[in-house]
Image (cartoon, rainbow, N blue to C red):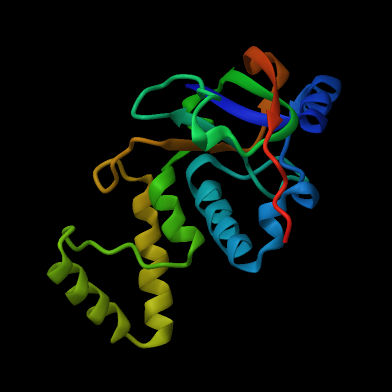
Length: 192
């Protein structure tokens, strides 16, 4: 499967030096947020069931793009979605065996990130309101179970638009690289 991952200079240098890239959890900003960590931990469990256990010492997956605007094409760095990078980065095009990849809908992944229930209701106000009432009426333990089960829909093409599709996999090996494109992100850091 053809994929594109965007990595910073340190990750790319590590890939070149070691011949393999794994997610370095200590450097992953998203994992510092408890809510996001919960979502990523859930994804790790799903990956173990779908693509197998990670290599020894690997806790979290590498992320890449499979579909952008419904097409299997490299990221267009001029688009607003890719303007948040700062400094030297690399778009790495790779070919990875299908059985080593878990695909998910990027738009609906945000339901997982926000710890939200993925309703089966048709997209109309009345149906959504009924589904929300039903879910809110469940005991909290059952809500958690139903919510986590609903998240599995992010992997289902029938439940999602499948316009922006992300790929997760345990490792990227140097021999899987098809091409590399260096770029310099010029986003300004957000001051808090």
